[in-house]
Image 1: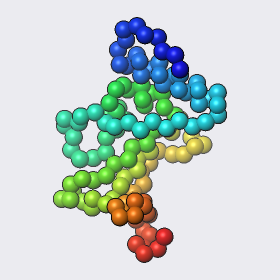
Image 2: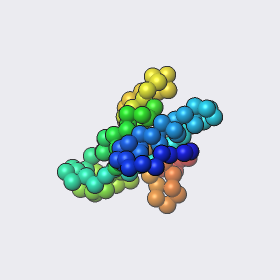
Image 3: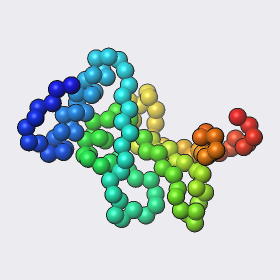
Length: 123
């Protein structure tokens, strides 16, 4: 990947990088996953962040084909801390899926995610 090295904003850099990565994925018929963390959420109230909360640029949601947020409750007073919310926030190709949420349980000992309905002893 070759990037032009002239003074640019972070947003311009992210846009150029994502365009090049998308071209690479299309050319090589592969999937590319980015794991991005939300920026500092000054007014965060505990719920899952949205795709525009990704640190760096709104281009992460504008240029992606699918956007998924993984969120875990960290406040025991707000609910179970072993429950994980998987939020599908963007699906460009509707054949690939739908927007919605799913909830899983996370076992810290085994590192496994399980359906909430699944009995704890069953794999």
